[in-house]
Image 1: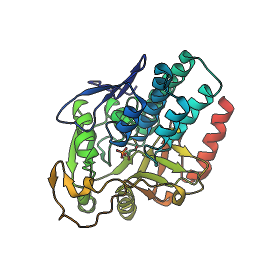
Image 2: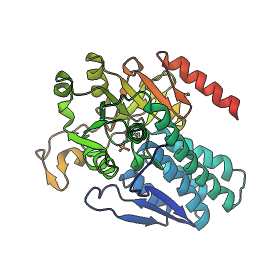
Image 3: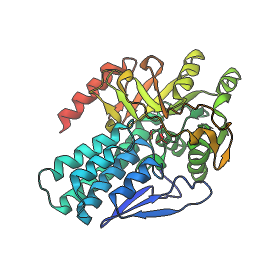
Image 4: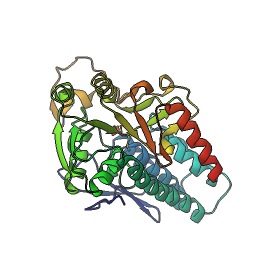
Length: 341
Ligand code: MRU
């Protein structure tokens, strides 16, 4: 059983009010914000008050419920929310699911129920990902993770951090290295905060330390989340994940990608087709309000990169884990999923 100790609530919704834990303030302040307009929800996704692929999807679903509750135009709300962040396919997946309900003229309670179902299914998927993934984590292992794929990025438990939590809850003595994850420091600020709350041994390292850590034999494996996985198993995740994958491959260490099926986009043949978000230059030129890059210097701020499937050891979903032939096994999982319905 995956436990999420010292619980906090990333996303919640009640009668037309969406409440988000403001992730831009963590770890200094644990502040919750109430949203009562779709524009507010869209801005919260864009400015990363809420972030992480499954959490973005759940938030967008509740955004549609909020629109229905408050009498905002649902079609326009759908369109506005779909323009917030382009890479995490969970956003479009959740909006499509909501559309299949509201476009049939469903009642408010049916629309709200669909959003709650998306939330609850995400909790259950993340729990299962932890259970399936823990078997790949050895007792005594030191695990690298990049960005934040934890309870802050999902409804509960997380994806990569669910695997880590499950291994910890099984009594395995594990240690985690959290890449700080420039420029927005999701690893340093968020992953470290979550794991520390759960009493899991975590050490924050600069993104540039990995080659050194591997050369000293200090990393056994890496577990990361994903924003979108193409049909061939190529993985989009936070910028820097490709460097992690490349270095792990070079040192013969496994890379596990943990993600729910809502992250898999079978309509895209390979990773080159995944849209990569580019964000504002201020995220690079400034740390907080302090300018660290000379005024006028050009900046490139891609938020994600693509890791080729050849550098991925396994993909762990709520339906199980893939083996060596990731593409074939994803297809098998998809077929099994279809059979269950
Ligand atoms: O830009 P972010 O913070 O939304 O990026 C998040 C990530 O890259 C996560 O690893 C990914 O969404 C998986 S979250 C379970």
